[in-house]
Length: 399
Image (cartoon, rainbow, N blue to C red; front, side, top):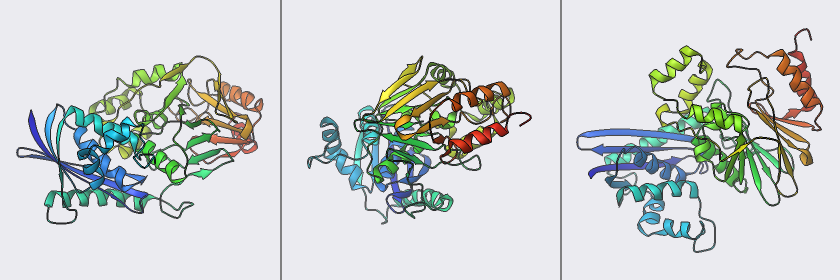
């Protein structure tokens, strides 16, 4: 087997807060740098992500000399703690939950695939490669720190916002940023549910970190409202059971065959299979679009269903919308709320964001027949049913 050397480091401002990671991979005279970050994360998650990303870059089993200044990573692997946490259902010896099980699952699997030799190095000392990784990590975290706006916690990064007794959301970003949609969370007495999977694994990790900061468990179920990239490309990082309509899963199966090199992305723009706004946002969200991995949900729904979370019910209603022909809506009667995904928006793929009048009329009839007070949209903060219907009626020709 080939022997490669990897250096990694992570950084976080606030912990939790804006964070970054850096990695250097060396083989012979070849050297490659990697880096990335998240708007809301922790230092340990960044340390783990750096190691995972570097190991995932290897195309075949290798002997890996891994250097890190993180005692959290080195000790948990070298002393077998992480394997022990996994064997006990991610519970530590002190009976407290082991944090970051999603990342540890990935790292343990990679350590089975490769032969990893662990080396702890002192941080911010005389190791030039560790210091370079630190520079990369800090640089990435500073990007998010500069971009982020004020939040409830005043930390400069998105925090969960409470809608009602049992509903929260993580604010999103618009087309001028990375087009991250609002992610919603519904907590029952027995289970919890998330609406949509976000636009990347990094988005999912930011969502989970926000849940952890708010003292909320990760969702048992995640529902996808439609196939568009910004609502589904984080699916590979989602925990628990994932569900969506059969139509959405069929489309995701097709998208999973797409290639993500520059030539293929430009060709889809030429053929109209993709649109410029999405291409731009994808390139902002992913430092390397080649990292994109698209998958389908665990469960395909062929009709409406009710999901009992314990004290709160989510009615999943499958129907087309002006935005896409594979949509679903989630009615939460106990909270008088309706999650619409992007169902209240126009059609960007076929009509440049305009509304098909017949589909808009059908949507209005559907919404008028449901009892709810608050609409949970995919790219805006929750708003009243009255305001929602008034705006949609304004898009009807002649209104």
